[in-house]
Each structure stands twice: as structure tokens, then as C-alpha cells.
Image (cartoon, rainbow over all chains, first blue to last red; front, side, top):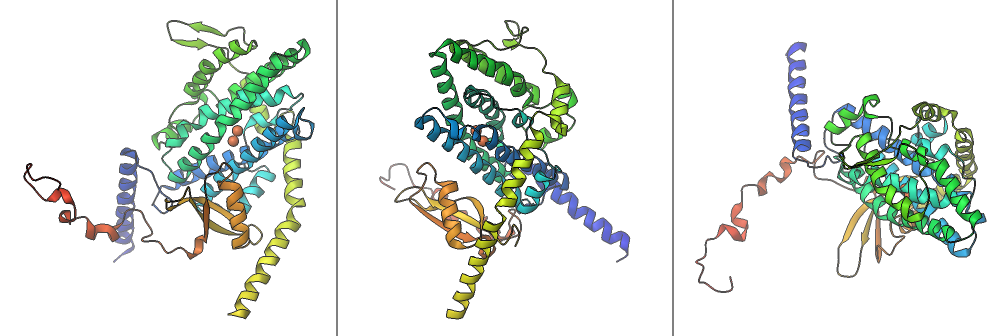
Length: 325
Length: 95
Ligand SMILES: [Fe+2]
Ligand SMILES: [Fe+2]
């Protein structure tokens, strides 16, 4: 067999594998870890899942800062549970990334040294306790819009992690909205705090869906692979439509003069977020980027002795078992 | 091994008495006891289970490297293993 024939055979085998992969996606079945998959599919998934995991982990920080300053034991317990959930979400997702051959320790390194990104939303500061409520309502609300369709993502472990996450997110959004309802029934100063938090978080929340469709070059491929099910703009519209009536019930004003119901479209019209701001924040120049990464790095480095102690203890126990056997 | 001496574990949870343990995901831990504690914290924060198994991922033997399995071909052509293969007149009761 000459080199040409070998190459042709490998090419044929690869084409058959590709065909089988395409047919599985076409039938709306899931791809599982040990299936053959195109390199691009694997790379795209690792990048997306890792970025998602990093977002959950970094996402603990803005709200975590309020745990010690929560106004009551009830709010403190709720906030603790929510932040703990976000840690869990990060871990589900890191596990899903590992099924694709990613290395957990390396993913952490890539987050800390800036080679991989996380959601731009967590680079904004939480200035008052109303921010905790608004994050639950708007940020977790936007996350739910993004994540519900991902429960049907074509990669099995990712879809299963998303199902688990979505079940927990509903508590996050409801505790936030309830917190805001409580504040809105309070004093004028409390109502002002809520409105101020809404003003600051509204636009960054809309940016969570990513750039507009015509500036999102990889979206089409992700949709063809059924990793993504809806475009950024579709999901953003869905979020606005869901949120406006909630804002009315709450009695706050969403800070967008162009926001109004469009009878013809059957949707709310709304203004465009400042896409330059999104680019700036993603590229590292948001209000809290440096602080978030510094905190994550410190937690990682300060936890090194715990990881080393656990490993030493495990090694010692394993040696003991071998000696006893 | 990576992540400073941790290994990957697969987690199985029994939702309630009478059900099988079901695979729920994986996690990293330094040893089986730590895997169990972490599994409790990670996968049963809302009473999702009454019993947990953890198994080192490396200890699992799996059917084929691919989910597209010629391994399962032998059962593909044995329709006579299914009750619907047998035609029984409609007026025969309880069968
Ligand atoms: Fe989350
Ligand atoms: Fe959440």
C-alpha cells in the first residue's frame, strides 16, 4: 500500500465518522463523550463550557461580598445558598468540560491568566443590597433565558448539566424578585435604591446575550451543530418581553426611552446596548475585571496547602491499605 | 492525575428507597471519602438522594470506545425476544 492509498482509506473512514455524527445531530440525538466528533465541535464546546463554568465561579464574587452584610439572618441564609449553588454550577460545568478531554487544573490556570473569558456581567460592582435583588431578578433571569434552550444542546453531558442548573436558577430569580418587592414596600430611600440598581444593571443584563447576530460570526456554526438553539438577538428579545411586565408589577422604570410595545411585531421594541462598552469590558477594561481575577487567583493560591494536604493524606491512606493487603 | 493530586470520580445517587442508583455526574477528589462528601455537597443540596455511590472513573470498564456499538448488534435481529412478535387471537383473555 502506497502512502496515497493509506490517505484515501483514512479519508474514507473519517468521512463515514462525519456522516454518522451529522446523522446523529440530524435526528436530534445527543452526542456522548466517547463518540467521534469533529475537532471544531470539541473545541467550540470546550471553550463555551469552560467560559460558562468560569462565569459561575466568578459570579460568586459580586453577591458574595454582601453575605456578611445581609440585613437579616433570613437574607443571609438565602444568599449563602444561592452563592453555594453558583459554585455547584461551576463544578457541574467543569466536569462536563472534562468529558471532552479538558484538564480541570489547566482550565483554572487559563481563567486566572486571562486566556479564557467569563461573562462580562460580573465585572460590574454591587454597590448596595438592592443589587443582590436586581442580580437575582435580571442577571439570573437573563441566564435562565440563555440556559433553558441549552438543556437541549446536542452534547449530552452539557445538556444534562444545564438541566440541573436550570432547576436551581428558578430559586435564584424568585428570591431576587421577592427581595425587591420587599424593598419596594419599604421607604422612599429603599425604593430609590432599587431604581438605582435597575438603572445600573439593565443594559449590562441585555449584553449578557452577546453581540448582535450580524456581529456574532460563530453563532451560525454553533446552531448548525445544535450546541445553540436560538440566536443572541432572539434570546435578548425573549428576555425583554418577559421582563417588562415584571418591572411594571414591581413599580420600577427600565432605563430605556425607546422601550415600547410594538403591536405589529407582537414584541417590545427596545434600544441598542452600548456595544463598545461590551467590547471594552470583555477585553478586560470593565470596572471590576482586575479585582475579580485577583480575588480568584488569591483563592486559588491560598487554597494550595489544602489541596496538598488532601493529596498527602490520600497517598498515606493508600500506602496503608497496600501494606495491610 | 492532575489538579494537585485529585482524581475523577463518577457519582451515582439513589433518589429514594425503591429506585436504582443513577449516574448524576462526576467530580474531583483526593480519595473516596472526600469524593463522597463532595458528592453530597454538590449533587444532593436539595434532598435529591438517600444514598450515594462514588466510583473512580478510571475503574469503570465500558463496552466500546464509541456509543455506536457493534457490540450490541447480536440483540438487533432477535425480534422473537419481544412479546409483540407473537400473534395471539383477540379473544384469548389475559395474555
Ligand atoms: Fe448559576
Ligand atoms: Fe444563578
